[in-house]
Image 1: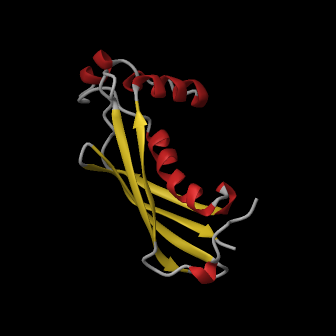
Image 2: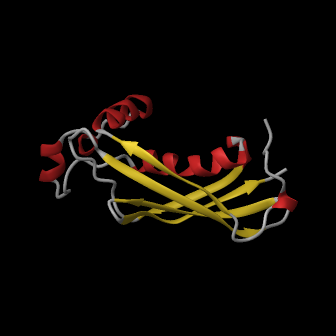
Image 3: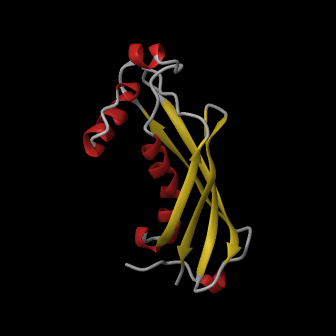
Length: 142
């Protein structure tokens, strides 16, 4: 599979379609099983509060993975992402209710680079707070 977006068709400032990703406690348990990260801050409310957190929080790598979906859905090929990094600024707090939390992600092309690549800057928010900082991906386009 190759990128479905052509480099020549993209301009700096191009916005990618924003997406919202729901997160529930069940989602976190499923992710723990897949990742092997069973830290109790991700599933045990009592433990999370005892260590100073407001409630159970989503795994950082889970949050990071959800955010990059905006880019991979846009480009059409996860393999087109050649570099991706973030800073974790705030946790995604996941209450134990039917709604859970939501990660809202937006992205835009911030620079056109060499070799048919672009830098995409992402913004990830949850409960009105920025949860990822310096969230950037380099993507190779067609």
